[in-house]
Image (cartoon, rainbow over all chains, first blue to last red; front, side, top):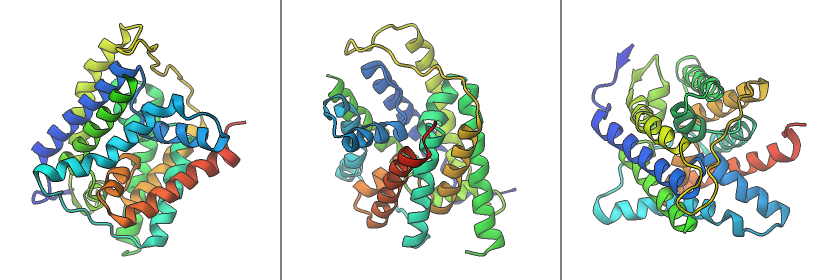
Length: 149
Length: 137
């Protein structure tokens, strides 16, 4: 294994994780729910498609709004860090479909199973995290080292 | 009040993702690339969020109600089945292709990155597709 010391950001990443943990705590103590973003997105989506009232979904929709405006608030104090997408539109559609189907089938993503589930020592979440991390490692290995994409 | 907590938590969560560097798909993929130049940053993000999370969930388990008065709804499902594993694998494959998981994709979309919009639209379509045709029976 060959660590990329130039791009490794230990302090920013450790502090970013603490901030994410604080947001999780605020949502949990505030609303009584875990901050699993897949569920926070899927629940209002289901409600819209069912044509039911969105009122019970308000706190989730606002959580999504918070994520969307976060970069605007960041820009008030500092320029946003660079972000690079290295796949084309077809790749993004495939990636999005897989993530959408996968997080619904497995009932959670990096935040719900990863952060919240592992914090509760949930074996169920650990199994899901190992599955998605494993698949992520294999996918990047195949794409970068076998197919040279 | 629940709405204020929703908005604030989403905002703080998003700022945390930006600070952590997780809104850059290339950085996420550098974590997933064990055989290349490996960037362990993502492990530290999850690690520190979980260390704090352990304390948070221990305290939350002792509460019956949230600050808003709503009941605490901490999941207690223990089922480990094929859907949990296959779902995780599909998610991981998509994560490896795009370098996006749901939270960072929404933050990237908010920052005005058009390509993130393609990912988010496809992700929402995938969620609907799952719930229509692939849901548990």
